[in-house]
Length: 112
Image (cartoon, rainbow, N blue to C red; front, side, top):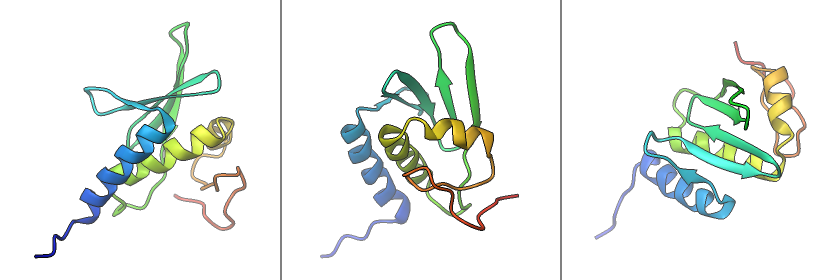
């Protein structure tokens, strides 16, 4: 008997592996906290934010296809931020654009 998994179930499994690889922690509210370099991020499927020691924070909305599983959105952001925490500044400054993991912007990908 062959087991069939939905895209959302596969994405959840993928997210678990990515969280373990990046050292991200899942909190009870469903958010993930990731430390990359000296920066601590808080992520969910809609927002990415920076958590600072002084209680200040900044965040922005995550751009994703509407039919992309939520877990896949989070996993992608975890991987990109772990590999290049400086992407956060580019993402925040150029909201609505999509970026590759190396920080280069995809051409023609402005979201409205």
